Image (cartoon, rainbow, N blue to C red; front, top):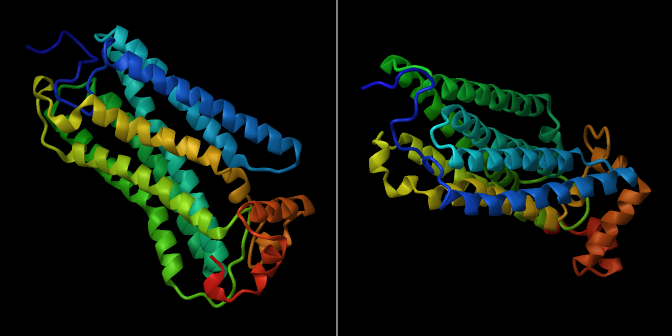
Length: 325
């Protein structure tokens, strides 16, 4: 028997299922606290840098992501206490899907900076820059599509529309898995292609640390995206017969767990210093030419803190190409 009217509650199993008070509220509360701490830390870093005229807008983006996750946790807690409130469930599901795209975009920007430092000739090429812009636009358009079909799926009983919604959801999960993995692919290509000039270092700290940080964060996000993609392609089953890969443990680990690790990873390694580039940087040599005295001092001090003696830091620019990393 069909429900009396829309929005209709979901009839098939999904990753994490419908939250409940006994299991989901305690776990969600922990993640709520973690993302609150992450938001405070990233905003504090942004404000401290702003006072020092050290602009790193991506710290503010990380703050926005944490705020999005705070709203997500609040909605899931509210949904757990009102399981029959379908509209509340729709809002929670939308926020679950919406937040991660910010991390994807941040990682793509980090990868772009690494490529431009390694291979400035094609890293600053219009085609390469245009490709990045297109990907970001497609990310946003895909998110709008996913939000639209998510809402529509709760307001129709048409099998044809549900099939269309599912096709778009499968496309979205596949595309986001590719986007999550793309920074890894770009870094690998950048390392494999022979360089004709020395790496144009930017920010502070060793270049290899930047690469490792980005690879680790991208791997974690790819793991989460791939799990969501795999479960999306799984056969549809009733809510009462939910398989293990839809379990709450898998949901929290591969959704919020990997995101929380990335949030605090970027705090602890200080990406605001390591991935900072001069304002208005554009073209070959822009990362070094646009560097202020304060930024240069920060970069050299970070090199020394990475267990380098001052004379070693100064000799870096004289090393062979193969030792630039």
